[in-house]
Length: 90
Image: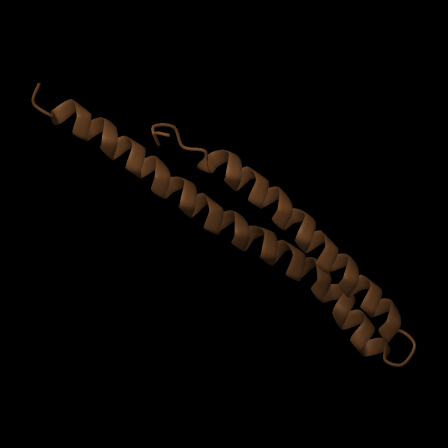
């Protein structure tokens, strides 16, 4: 029941894997919609096809940056705990 060991890294890895799956699904839906646009609007079809990898990459990078920020906050906390333990009077 103690919180000496953090499970955050495992949770962050799972969240990142889920986000990759979600953004890939979104990208596939965008491509499917682009195929549907091809019937009545070629310009919209090409805009959607060109926007799909941008949306996918932007989503993945944004999620990665946010999760790295979370990891860094926990690592800072761990390092501060070590420093505090070293400076405590014995």
